[in-house]
Image 1 (cartoon, helix red, strand yellow):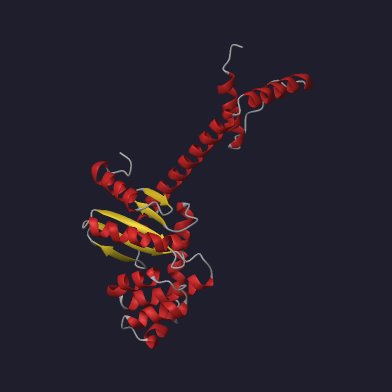
Image 2 (tube, rainbow, N blue to C red):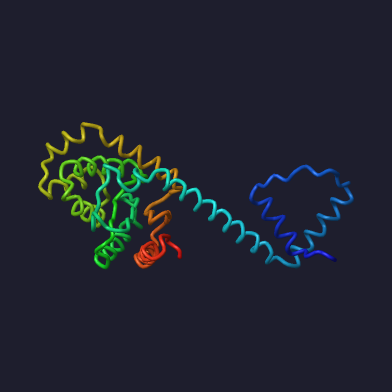
Length: 255
């Protein structure tokens, strides 16, 4: 044949997998022609099954590119809410030249393991600004812990790093009781905590972070924002540090 069957079939699979709507043709195939084309494609795929993997790989890359573009637009649009929110706490250098934002849940096992990544980054890089953005998505206990953490942050923001490390690094499940125990161990009375929790400012904080997560395409924790890129999952300190280095070098996470 005078055409490249592999390329044509791969392109067809990608188009239909992506839900592309093709323009209506100026002519219609009869039943015999449709059958011949169907038989040809079936025979070719049976003989060359690897083309399905090629199409799947291309589709995944297309979806990843679209997700990245969506996240970049959301970061630009919500710059203040992401990097300068009054509901968040900043660790590291408050005037650092690169900011890392972590979305986390105190009951997330991957977040607990990623705590050491944060510590490594802060130890290795004294010019990075690390923003903590709590995203309680793992049920009522996480929301209860969030209410305590928000109250503690309002009362003693200078101690929030200690609170964060103790609660996220603890073995017990985070809930109101365990979070309150951490808060009181750091010198804040339960009475003051209860009073602050009754103000319901937590509702404002969680609404903002849920909206941001949705705009950024974040469906799990931990997730990060570095520069203009959303990073999904516990990718490790080394990968995040590499992105920070690139931001300093060329202004992007990938140079």
